[in-house]
Image (tube, one colour):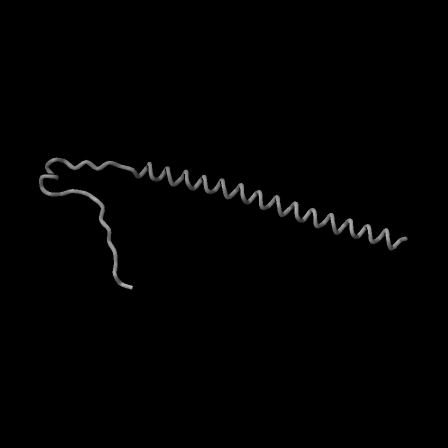
Length: 81
């Protein structure tokens, strides 16, 4: 009879430990998901703020345009491998 009680006690403790372990794992995963979403939103906000801060309009005077100066996009590439 003592062996049966001991066996039931050990089974209960093992089950309880496994349950606590799984619950802890779920909580950590949920917390990580929330932190990940918050971080993504923060980085997107910073990125949008930088774009707005750096956005500027360049207006060339008529005198400069008549001299042939203009602005546009330049791409520099390298063919070396």
